[in-house]
Amino acid sequence: MTLAAKISLGCIADDYTGASDLANTLTRAGLRTVQTIGVPSDNLALPEVDAVVVSLKSRSIEAGLAVSRSRAADKWLRSRGAGHVLFKICSTFDSTDAGNIGPVMDALRADSGEGAVLVTPAFPETGRTVYQGNLFVGAVPLNESPLKDHPLNPMHDSNLVRVLARQSRTQIGLVDLATVTRGAEAVRARLAELAGKGIGAAIIDAVFDRDLETIGLVAGEHRLSVGASGIGLGLARALVSTGKVKPGAASSESAAAVGGPAACLAGSCSQATLQQIANAERIMPVLHLDQDRIITGANEAERALDWARPRLADGPVLIASSAKPEDVAALQARHGRDAAGHAIEQAMADIAENLVKTGVRRLIVAGGETSGAVVDRLEIPGFLVGAEIAAGVPVLRAVGAEAGEMLLALKSGNFGGPEFFADALRLMR
Ligand SMILES: Nc1ncnc2c1ncn2[C@@H]1O[C@H](COP(=O)(O)OP(=O)(O)O)[C@@H](O)[C@H]1O
Ligand SMILES: O=C(O)[C@@H](O)C(=O)COP(=O)(O)O
Image (tube, rainbow, N blue to C red; front, side, top):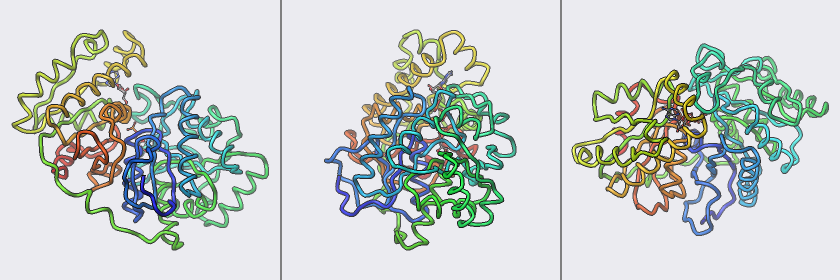
């Protein structure tokens, strides 16, 4: 990898859509950013950048594995000069009581020698705000939002001090909004007070971008922070406002058209994605996969490919496994949660691999785990960030992919407007 100068900000994302969301935020804030898939190999040619987002697929794997992969990424980022590393988690704090946010944070904190780590999933642009340590998704607390029905990590507690305490070995404190509103000095003092009591991490409230700017200033003086794109925004703005990074333009290379057939794959079962699929039915052929056939090993991926191939010459197609919460619950009761999720992800990867062999060069994937499975199968080592399709979702240009020139959009299940697929296709030429 050709990184001549040292990087100013290192990031480790626990899934691939989350990584592209963060890379998008950093780029818009003026940081030249690349997204890599895992720790990049030395021979991957990348431009000179201010920030690197290493994407892991570590959100829903066994905690020990998530820790070791995150530590390896942290070591690589620090060896490239990153003084601060942001561990990027989901803005809806997706995790279970077994991890992985707490265990990874504990390990990175120990490695960096950090006192008390600031933690916030706030991302106001997408409606995620934190008040008194409670996460709100739009107008409702996390546990009343659609995240209560997530197929892999249903969220039933909106109090993040409690949620993180159940996952972490350290005590968790709170830096409340009143303190944030008083400014950086007040946050520094509160953090020092918590660290003095041996409290190793604190959920910090944020409702507006200006709160994240205050948080970014303080966090950037430390070695480690944990959060979603909002804290990324704060860190990036602090790097620019303190003159540590000169704001640069996004690479013009990332805007060139690739042409060729386009396809969409949806494995997210979020409310937003279900609506986007329903709207896509009006503008392109849509195939709904039979999930039982996938899990029992019947050749459902082959059936999907036979359906897609003759249609691709006429325009984009969409293949979806997505289902409503009651259907997801019924499928999981029949086959088990992890087995169902894994089998569907692998079927999506099979479909993506064969679509690319058929000539597809523009691929839109809805769902974080789904995107991880697809990008891994396509063996794409990294991405440059292009135009913004929706808040948190950029057009990505593959770097070093075996298939050559490719554009992808990796959409978090919850993100994007009702016409997301049309919006993405318009920008991916
Ligand atoms: N119909 C379905 N029933 C059960 N699980 C499903 C179904 N469709 C997809 N899944 C699984 O649900 C999970 C969705 O997670 P993900 O792709 O990360 O979406 P999101 O971005 O909404 O979190 C994946 O593991 C996927 O394989
Ligand atoms: O922070 C966010 O909400 C996203 O960047 C994110 O992590 C998305 O995860 P998925 O919903 O699993 O795609």
